[in-house]
Length: 321
Image (cartoon, rainbow, N blue to C red; front, side):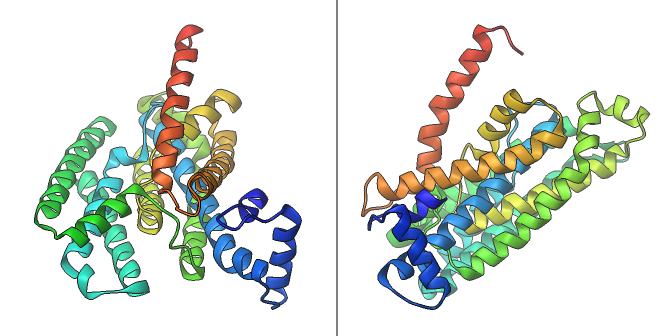
């Protein structure tokens, strides 16, 4: 995070960055203080919070689905949020400008993600309980439906709206400000405070739902609560930063290889690693083609895909399951 504060279109030394941050904190608005305190600090902190939420949510989903290759987007929240944002951009984007437009798009994404998860859950719920397999299939179906509706909107959108949709879907943290940071902090406290409470229950679910019930776990309550928490967390992240791929998939997978499958250690480890990964990715997005900034979602995909493939090849080489 300190390196990220010093990096950007205007390169500062670590000492200059920390000195500028101290000056900005005291109300002395020097050039370094304004750059670090008002522009870079909110962005770095937002990257850390979003990365922690996505990675922890991914670890919880992998435990719930009992699949180390599961991803939060499996329950449809990412696709629903993308559709919600696209609807707002196409319908009212031209009439809104500045922070009002950003807020409206974020609200549309958040609502769209929650509605998608609610629909998935209703499709998977029955008198016998909530089937994880049915929830997975419903999530795939809703994701496909949201993608089709999003493509339909893009087909009828004008050039300006189409470009805004494309840039938003690539993911970016350039809209970081104090209001977004405050919202992300509240969501992060909710996710990082609530999910570790279910660590022992997730450990029991790794044995299977029947075995977890024999151990006294309220499986249905656990599944409902986890889905709601993850939907709120991931929906908020998509609303704040657009679609950022691979953080919720790669980070829990790597941490599981390092610290083991026990969710008491896996969840906090994933939060720290997710925060670090997204801060590094956003730093690369700002400096690789400076002063032009790449969308951070592109960076996480470019870095994440080869690294993830190498991990899978390594696991296959050593005969690991």
